[in-house]
Image (cartoon, rainbow, N blue to C red; front, side, top):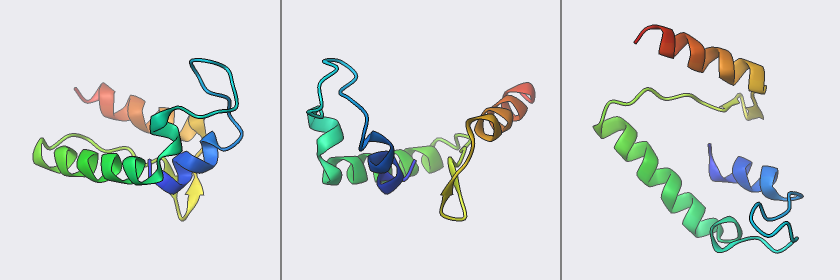
Length: 77
C-alpha cells in the first residue's frame, strides 16, 4: 500500500501493541514507510510475485474488492 494511504489509515488508530495514541517507531516514521514500500516493490518485481493494489484511481479499494482479487489469484495456484 502506498505510504500516504497507510499513514492516513493509521492516523486515528491506536498503537496496535500498547493501545495508546503514540505510534510505534515504524508507524511514526514516514521516510521509513516510504523506503519499505520501495523495497517491497523491487522485491515483488525481482521475485515475480503477484501484486494486489489496495488503491484505485487515488481511492482506497473496499476490503471486499481486495479480498476478491486475492481469492481469484489464489484459485489459479
